[in-house]
Image (cartoon, rainbow, N blue to C red; front, side, top):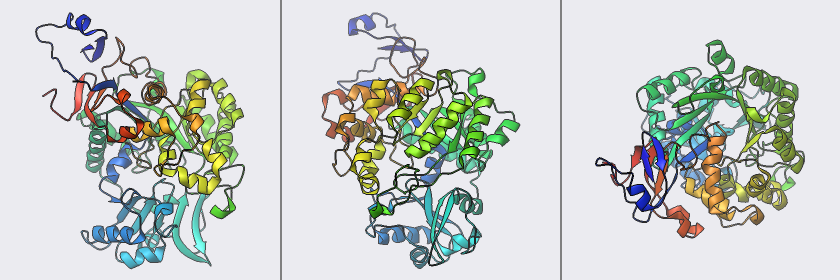
Amino acid sequence: MAIGGGKVLAVGRRWEIEALAGPDTRRVDLGGRAAIPAFNEAHMHLLPFGLGLSMVNLRAEEVRSLDEVRTRLRAAAATRPKGEWVVGRGYDHAALDIGRHPTVGELDAAVPDHPVFIVRTCGHMGVANTAALRAAGIGHNTPEPEGGVIEKRDGALTGLIQERALSLIKAAMPEPSEDRMVDAIEAAGRHLAALGFASATDMNVGMTADLAEVAAFERAARDNRCLQRMWLVLAGNPEGIGDKAWEAGMRPWQTGGDPDALLRWGAAKVFADGSAGGLTAAFFEPYLASAGGGTGVFTFPTDTIHALLKKYHEQGWQLDIHAIGDAAIEQVLTGMEEAGATPERRHRIEHCGFITKDQRRRMKARGILPVPQPVFMYEFGDLYVKNLGLARTEAAYPMRTWLEEGHHPAASSDSPVSTVDPFANLFTMVTRKTNRGTVLGAEERLSLQQALHCYTWCGAHSTFAEGVRGTLEPGMDADIAVLSRDITEVAPEEYLQIETDLTLRGGVPIFDRHGAFA
């Protein structure tokens, strides 16, 4: 392959490409490694991921017991003055030895003199200690906001805060400075570049620090500290910045933008429900009684969310709407239909995990894209079986069905909810295995080529960029990932040992493990 001017110039046999070389041409011999289109992370939270790198890591890969949760929180508190917040990220209550969420009392016992809040891996709920509840003004008589839950047992707070009630905790936390946010954008970008990503999406800009996040991204781009080509999605809930951004003059990229621009503000996001692992995704049929029952949580009444979808559709934004359970998907799909969704608009249903055949048919008719996270099956599949039963779980995230029906599913991670490691996602798409080895829905397995297509071209298509990246053809952007091994020649179980050696964005290295471009 020959590249120049940031583009792929030619692909062919070695002698054909060598004939194009000039005296100053740089040659990089891959030595049997594989070059693929750089990965495109179609749904993640890049700024929160970067900020989370300095939070207390509670992810299940490392933390499996309540004692370890408390040990890590206690160690973090010991490095900070009393009264400063301690925030932990990524615990999975189902993976802890106690098999439940920690309680306010258990956090108090570990850290009594700092406000503590730990966020579940899904990001839709967390547990606060007494100091954090007090700082947020939450007491046993505090009314629950619409679409939110403040859990109580026997009239007493447990510390568990879910869905839109999280805004009470957020409002009490200090916002990060612009300097810290720019640092976080760069740190997250370097982490992604080391995994082979040249494009990414930040799915909810404005939920951490309001419009200051917009300024942070723009400064990071100006200062060459934003490493990926970004598709940026405004937080459009009432708690978000959609209206403020519009009033400030922000308009959708689709009104006339450059697909190679580093920052493209193209979409608005609204939440319709929660998470299946946390029992707050909204379903028609209830969760198993053994898991707690109930049908989940709608974030908004139907009239409210439909009005939001109509407003952002009419303003010209792509709609990137969170819906996991089939009842939430129905609410969102109906709202998109009523708003006038057409294939040209490429509206998206994010996650779209537990979908019916009729809903797939209607999405295809309107060109509404599913943006799933196959890695959820790897990390949470066994929990889905516990919560929803085997049949519903095996039909979840139907990647092969989507591809065969022509839906263009853009594989992604929702990081920091799940690992952003693309090789875990590829492994899941090809095997449908969980991290415990359970095979769920074998008929939905993909070939490696199909999985790579979902992680590259489909991601570009979901952001109106398939004409400039997602494949390695002449004229396309030279966004390339060089893998440490030829992934087409190894068994799926070996994917998890593969690394990225080189990542190019527009022919320029943004990660170079062995100095090939030094």
